Length: 170
Image (tube, rainbow, N blue to C red):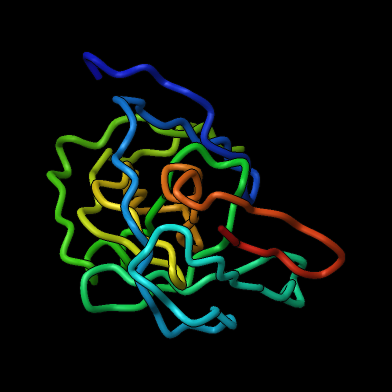
């Protein structure tokens, strides 16, 4: 992986993910999305003052609906993940293809290396928060759910957890 610095992505379901790092994506204004949470009214201005509250699921995690292209994808919010990690099924549904020969170790699981490939998601939104050119990794096998990591979450000014709620706000 010439030209990449590898950083720890996350430890989810017993797998430690690694992510290539190749610079910051540009911040963009917010966009509205209908999802499972309760977003505030949207605005095209960056300082719209809204928030989105996600309730803790029965499994103890927080999930958000991410809009990528014209589809909605349920993702586990992983504040410890360096980048967004996509399951192979979600990547196919989004229209992201990869060369199986390009698979390389991106994580270390209990049973050995987890293979994946770095990609860029052109446009992605969660509630009223939008990001462009989001760094991601496709993990075709072994990832049970896509992860919403810091390569997207860094576009959200405030992410906080209190009691059984995770709040995304400006």
